[in-house]
Length: 328
Image (cartoon, rainbow, N blue to C red; front, side, top):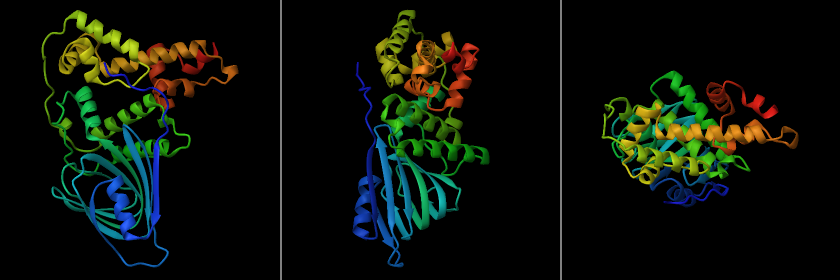
């Protein structure tokens, strides 16, 4: 079985602040994707500035540019999401043509096709997510086969989901940029990335909204289910993937999903989160708040990065607040 390093690893950082077209173009190529850009002639103090922070499962960027430009990118092989804080962005895709985005707007860039941009005095927050991670979450949550997922539009499905997505981007981008960053923990980074993927699947039109859910893929022997549970119990402290658990169980990911839904009314990854919740409870029971132990720190140790959600999940399962467990 693959062994994932659980040691904290600070995010990789990079940045640029320049008005030199060649420097900017090369930074874009290394950080984002190849591009053909044209820069407007502006005042001598105009700048293009980017601060980037990256962990293996997700990356974030903050872009501020008073140097206006247009560009056509090479096709993206990952998912790029951004929120406009200031300025104006026009994005052009083969499927939807040109869409102008004002401050407050959010968008997703389609994968596998060139994208056109026109930027004017911009301030953006960006998240970059590997397509494989979205595929994994779509398979676990919606039973969509890997490779069948694609986004159908670049803008959110509703005003409510738009507001929710902006909050997700703010939280995740902020965590990536913090120093020290909580994303240095592989488990925290993995769980936050999963939250981003789930939010993206609900925010942007995609095949999870139109593909039928697959039905019974075959029986899973009780011994295989026990092997899956034992593997989860033994490795709950590190990032886990559905395919990895299925391999340990000796069955297919699709069959394992069906078995967990049938016997436990949850998915394998839902079971993983329940096990981590049990570990967090045990840590709260033995921790001493007089020695500086906190609910937030213990929750984060087990991948629960949003305190309010952790408290709600803990209360639903154990019938009490985590703060009460810590005190007693």
